Image (cartoon, rainbow, N blue to C red; front, side, top):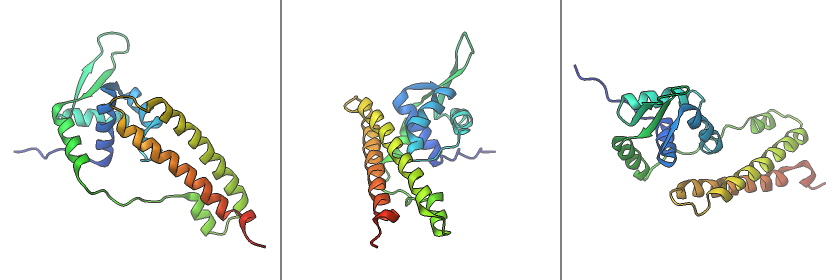
Length: 176
């Protein structure tokens, strides 16, 4: 009986793309890298860093080797099949439309007092802007990180745009 091919999800491709840049990594290193990169524009459950590598290795998209000493962690890397699957997926000229899931907007819709929400959201966007700008400064011009650089440029622009938007919808900006 034939086994079903392993279905690759958006999170699978996120993991493949991350390992394409890192070369090889343990699950812990994958989790840390996701938090500094992909999670800024694609929410990834923490379990993805621990369960998905083993699943993809079982399907032949990743190799896995166990460290000889120390904690004997598994180290994962892309195989040729994983790299081919990633390149094929990335080359597809379509992507699902973006989804907005914003509790701030939901609370505004429900009639929440705007100022406390706005203050908290402005602080968040300023902090993320500084964080992403720091990451961008680190990877700008580094060979092999062009995709990350583009995503970071978009992230920086997004947080700047959100700060401008929040300024426009602030109660202080409303005409009297």
